[in-house]
Length: 212
Image (cartoon, rainbow, N blue to C red; front, side, top):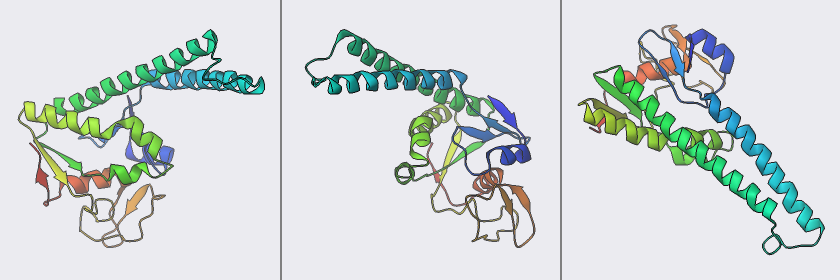
């Protein structure tokens, strides 16, 4: 897990975040990355390329992969399946770890946004990262843990303008672009990291559904 100050984080990532993250009470971003996942993904790519080459060689020889699959290909397939299973298990455990850490801070309430995950999955730039972060599983586990310890979980509508509405004066910044890492209010001049600002706006939302 890495810690970043808002300015440092904005300079580093600029456009978007493709990992689980949260802001703590001191305005420090905690980005959750698992080094094991990176190594396993590299290994998986190597195994997939190796498997692809084996199938290509079968085609060149005029053999059908379904009927002429050798022991080496079967072993390769098993290794690929095993790596997929390991990655899925690591991500599941990591999602639970992040949710548990949020609950351990003992907040009075937790605010989440009703994200349009289905729509985001259609975006070819985001779909892979979204699938890997297991947002639905994270939300389910977070609600379960909050309910267990008597914490309130508030869900804000996906149409709530958390990114565009100034968390200080309420002014709406309609021209905010995805490429803008820093939020600057045209009304009061309030300046803040875009993600931290959105989190602050969600925290102050008054229109929400209580899930626990």
